[in-house]
Amino acid sequence: MRSSNPVFSRRGFSRDNGYAGFNAQQPQAGGPAVGTQGNPYAQDAQNPYATNPYAQQDQYGAPVAPPRGSVMTMDDVVTRTAITLGVVVAGATVAWVTDMGLGLAIGAALVAMVLGLIQAFKSKPMPPVILAYAGFEGLFLGAISNYVNQWVPGAPMQAVLGTMAVFATMLVLYKTRIVRVTARFTRFVMIAAISFMVLTAVNLLFMVFGGGDGLGFRSGGMGILFGVVGVLLGSFFLAMDFKQVEDGVAYGAPREESWLAAFGLTMTLVWIYLEMLRLVAILSGDD
Image 1 (tube, helix red, strand yellow):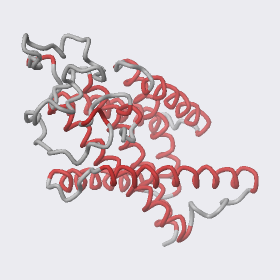
Image 2 (cartoon, helix red, strand yellow; image 1 turned 180 degrees about the vertical axis):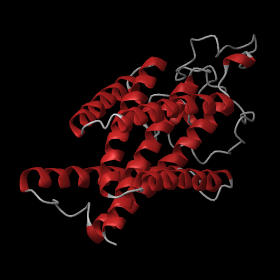
Image 3 (cartoon, helix red, strand yellow; image 1 turned 90 degrees about the vertical axis):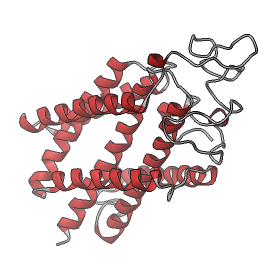
């Protein structure tokens, strides 16, 4: 099964060409791949990088190791992710300081969504588009956080700390193999995520046309349960993102792919933060 994250779904990051091959042996991040069968960066007809200089073979048909400086490393992923998140924080700071209105914030969110879709359907990473997405997403997050902070003081900081805790916890669970990203795990998360988004859309329609709180998924006990489910889904997506990054590093993905990894991780962290912010606001409102 392809990755749930749209920026990875068009890539061959997963073993067995990105399909249900998550049960294969799992090398440590950055370690050598086990054999060449199922390696999306080896030379074969389904390899998206088969025609570039990183996917060459010697005279016996064996894959040639790409130049050391041309492949993605974990340091590359960390650096690009830090840069992308830094732009998000910068945009959020600008929106907070200028007290950006919700109308402009919604406009920024729409622009970020369009930029995200453009990058998701491109065959190659485009750092300017990724950074622009991060900037507009940051403007939206800063404005909505400022709005919630006026209603529930301190909620944004609690949401940030909660997001960091979720990230650290899931990273530990993944690295210790307590959480294993298998084909069954992926199918479960995808079904749950689709159901979650459908219920969210239905609730929004009821809010728009029926008024009030719609089906009650964003307040009271039902809102708390829905928020917890949203955070859990975000954490599961993090595990899937970790898996994609680990496979990309192990199989020597081109270095430019680290921008796609940063983009995917940023989108997942934004999701977790928004769900955490809503959850904190509901819990504080019930006190």
